[in-house]
Image 1 (cartoon, rainbow, N blue to C red):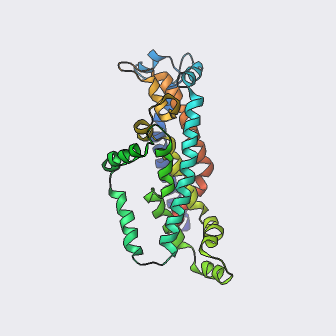
Image 2: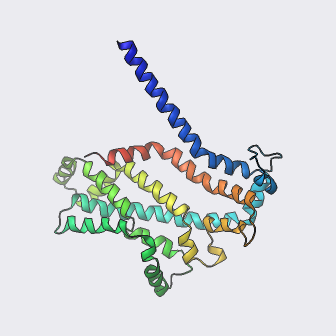
Length: 280
């Protein structure tokens, strides 16, 4: 009896892993094609049937692509925006989420529902009013419109995620700290923030990916060549009638690598943060 049960379990596991591997391969095909195209000469990209292995392999595509897009300047601007955005979102979202999760004040639930309801508002609806505000402040063609909002608790999803995580932390820890003389700020920074590391890493990964890959923000607010980001620099390879697809693929691979590295390094905390957020 036990042998048949073990066979059934083994068969189910084999089926699950087979489906997962097939799904992973389906998702990897575009990345493999991008990597292959980045090493080809331009005419080889349009050959049918597709030629997956480049002949010859053109490693110089990467050097040409990075030189044409002025990679150092675009990387510097993108790093400045990304570092400040991630820092701002972590601090502001954690503060707001802690207030909604732990502090008691009149209208707290109504205010939280109002904040959550903004997730249903498309960004296109607020794009023009926000642009007018930043233009009035004289912030257009500066990095401020891409950085300052992150310090104002503008990420509703991050607030929701962190609030749900803070609710899973036993209130007895907070009560014990208050008995020892800790105030709300000290409890927040010395108890809540260290315990919320998985959720903070999750929010940080989302913030990093959103800022690193942001295209519309820099496109709307940045006009100067000296402020060009990596997402905007990729447009260098697309002209009105033609595009240098091999160089574009090479540049895209380079831009994608930091995102992949960040995710694989922090994936354990990312999965843990998603799992623990749903527990209370």
